[in-house]
Image (cartoon, rainbow, N blue to C red; front, side):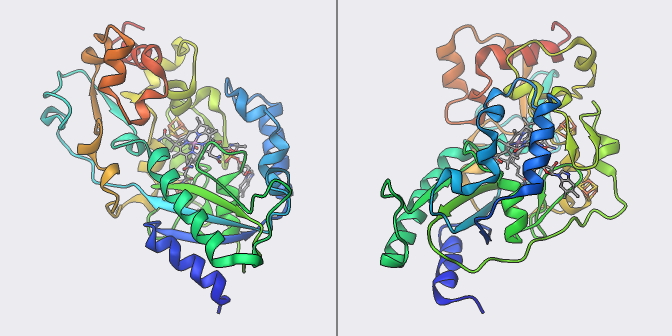
Length: 329
Ligand code: B12
Ligand code: SF4
Ligand code: SF4
């Protein structure tokens, strides 16, 4: 049985709408550190310069929050059914033309960073209040620090260590109940909490994701080369999409879910309880490519994709993707 404080924190995660929670000791992740260094040395991070900035911190929570003892890892389910008929359109758009592009599932509704950050601040306040003097502040007076996605923390590696799920050959964190359709976030705290048990891979002999990846970005089990990943090429990439990869985009205009869609652990997704993630709160699963290409000003672009993850590649990036799919790249 976990201590009452640990249990109180695990329970609060549910109160705040997180679907899974676990605790990892705030230790140095040596193996993951080696894997990250090699990934960077081989240039697998492509143009994501931020990944190469102080990479040692990602596996060393002490370098992020001095005095940290525990990492609370949280997962939030964002899955929902895939509408089968792109011709129907969604709330924000008129029925699309035949030329539609697919949007990855994590981006169908509102931007998850905003939704989760809000809950993380509430969680931090709860931890401080519950712990009192048991949660001593560091030199800067901080006793907690939370991140979703943007922080210098290997979120999947800590989630595995906390026992929330295992890392699959597609490199993603897979939970029992929700598959890999979850967002991860972490709270580093100086509080001593009881850690969960680390998980090992449960992929067995399956290699469906490796076989399905159209570009060879999953070049070996547990290894991804961002230079060839459609998710990178359509979201983070600031350059042109290489000519040789354009025919392999498979209709994806923003992100890519292929290595998740084929995963047996993702076969029967449970629908998210977070209304902001639902399709009618954002752009939904399809974009009309001609409409994207026709956006003339940045203001029009920002209005069309307000509060959604599609703002990330900016107008130039999203239009580059649309033009590539329309054969005008
Ligand atoms: C950079 C990044 C990307 C890059 C690189 C992806 C990658 N695999 O690294 C790009 C732009 C391609 C990307 C794409 C996507 N991303 Co991303 N991304 C990140 C980010 C910011 C950092 C990831 C990282 O540290 N990469 C470094 C490399 C070295 O890590 P890695 O490939 O996982 O390598 C590990 C393994 O190789 C492992 N390893 C090595 N050998 C072995 C052997 C065994 C047996 C095992 C088990 C492990 C293992 O050690 C390494 C270090 O832990 C995280 C957020 C965060 N702060 O952690 C989100 C994150 C991983 N992304 C996320 C999502 C949702 C996506 C997409 C699904 C979005 C989409 N639909 O388009 C795709 C999925 C593509 C894929 N198959 O990974 C989620 C994943 C949630 C989950 N369930 O796992 C995260 C956690 C964001 C979040 N907060 O929710 N992403
Ligand atoms: S997101 Fe798409 S391109 Fe990237 S590894 Fe998965 S299947 Fe391959
Ligand atoms: S598709 Fe198969 S190999 Fe790939 S992550 Fe899922 S279970 Fe593992």
